[in-house]
Image 1: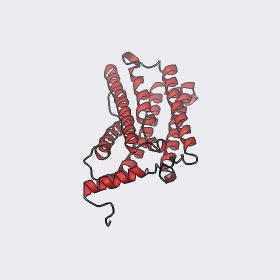
Image 2: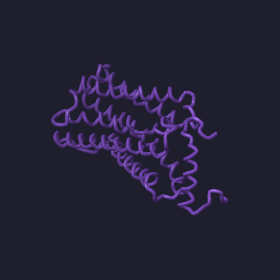
Image 3: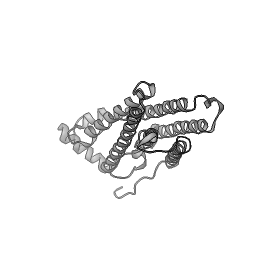
Image 4: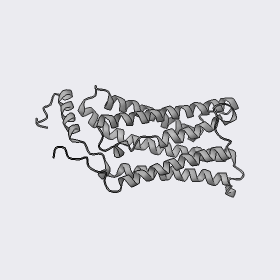
Length: 250
């Protein structure tokens, strides 16, 4: 019916989204508490510059990945949702880049070698692939040049690699937590010292956040349904880019 009110969120979706955000905020608070209480805090200059790295990577590469935008903003215009999705991912990339610069500068100041550990290899791969994913997404879904069929073929790959990079980012953070603990409290880690317990808790929060977000993303009934005007625009776009009539044979 014309003028019908927007459909409400499916049962359970709002609760899972709320839980994911609560876990994410708790994760950021626990990360900040770990760095502040046991690692001296965060500063751009001096001995504390390294601590900018874990904080920025958790914030940018995990919490700010805008994977739930299309689940949360179900009734807003697709163009607006797409723009928000792109901007949040762009902000995440900028924050992650700050974290990468911080760790390289800290290593250089302390005379520590770069890019030798599995954590650093996975982290750099995650960041570079994330940047490529973002650029491809802008090219296919925001730029006007891509055809309807090309967008349709690329969309499943875009979704898959978005989830895969989210999982890789969490795994890399877990590697980084373990690496920090072994560097800083190697001799006392096995004695359940408070710093080790708190850092392990950060790791569990990372896993829990990833599982809840992943669950929301993989529920087909929670996907954002296309609005009526979006279906009409899609048909018009297909006609313009491929020369097909909306009512023509497939």
